[in-house]
Amino acid sequence: MAHRLEGKVAVITGGASGLGEASARLFASEGARVVIADRNTSRGPQVAAEIGDAARFVEADVRSGEDVQGMFAVADEAWGRVDVIYNNAGVGGPEGRVTECSEERYDLISDINIRGVWLGMKYGIPHLERAGGGSIIVTASIAAITGVAGVSAYCASKGAVVAMVQAAAGEWASKNIRINCILPGNIATGQGTRSEEQIDQSRAFMASYNPIRRSGEAIDIANAALFLASDASSLITGQKLVVDGGWTSLDDRYVQVMGPQYSQG
Image 1 (spheres, rainbow, N blue to C red):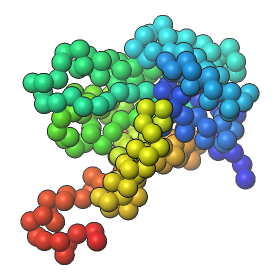
Image 2 (cartoon, helix red, strand yellow):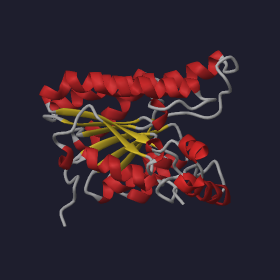
Image 3 (cartoon, rainbow, N blue to C red):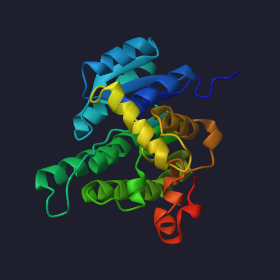
Image 4 (tube, helix red, strand yellow):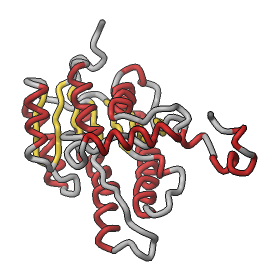
């Protein structure tokens, strides 16, 4: 069976853990060479070493234009090209109501989730042009399309990312540069910050309410990213790929009003 990313070079931000790590490992198994860009200087080199010769780690803060240019320079130096950019790095977490979120918290979320993606496009697109085209993938969130009380700054940042993807896709389609985003639902991640017991508890809770009766896993998002990185998606650009087990397709308020006979069972 042919490898779906054979000969391609991918740069993945936030690649040291979670969705980024799963994608880096999957991309490499499908023939890609990967640059893992992350601030985590303990986990990142370990992931790269486990992948082997097809991976490089670079310490990078996506808020820094210099760092972002540096991660593409690593790809150029190692393999002479960039074909796929996965702007995955992001930050979330509790904020409280709008009046309770600090300005510092808002700035952090905006800088990483919006500026980081913008810098990845700004400095990455010239590399894709030189390669004759390529794919940019952005991790957004279902929070971009449905309100989530208590994380308004996060929702705003992911909505901005979706709008950026759609605008940039129109700018670069004629250059064979495709730009799409993935909107994950609730995913069981947190390796390194939560215990396996806590993650398993999250899995069970998510399975109880997802229309597809299981939690989302990092590999689910990695598989979506693989599709968007590969030539199988060569006619797809400017799109939002929702990967949420049907969560955003179901309004539970209907069940509450009409009765349990209308539930998923």
